[in-house]
Amino acid sequence: SDRIMPEIDTKLADYGARVLGGRRGAEIRIHAAVQAIEPGRVHLPDETIEAETIVLAAGIVPNPVVAGLPVDKDKRGHIVVEGTMRCKSHPEVWALGDCALIPAPDGKPYPNLAQHALREAKVLARNIHGVLNGRPPRPFVYDTLGMMGSLGHSRAFGQLLNLRVHGVLAWFVRRTYYLLQMPGWSRRLRIMIDWTFASLFRPDIVKISLDSETILLLREAAAGAAPENQRGDDTSGSAEPLRLA
Image (cartoon, rainbow, N blue to C red):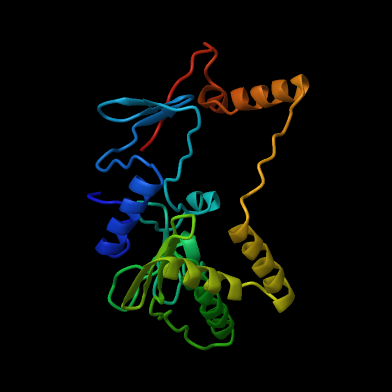
């Protein structure tokens, strides 16, 4: 991609890149596909990056159970459904959320967002109940309210319908929205108090001392998670990079 966060407005994506690359000290690379990952290294087409801690955030993928279902899927593994969320190839199968490719009225798929999944569930439940009682299912129709993202330390961005916001205002709007999604005012109040103290004081830094036995167990667990041990077919003891499609 030519920029980060291609799913949002270009100006907001540029703002996010400035915050992450400037104030946060992140090094952003575009047009850089990861070819392989192995312990301590990330392989790109033209270089290898040394890293002690590697966090892979490759996007949303369907539930692994979906891969074994004999139904029509798109190239990313989502079940292809009609607007009613009924599977085209198997009418007895219904799918929603991250597992499904649900078409909007304009033919484009709905994004895999929580705001859609929550509303898809209600429509899907009504459709199944209706079909069992002889009524035709209705298509899912929903206008996206917008998208929001956090950049940390009182910075965020948001695209709410046709309105673009960023900075402290977006951070406040985002927190308010998620606060209102919490069940019960007692829980909301506790969260508000916690957030208030977190904004007024520095976070506590706690050093956890591990004994030698615990350290040994952690090292054994890390070794067991290495790619060669996950495959179960390599007895040479050498580390083979994890290849990404």
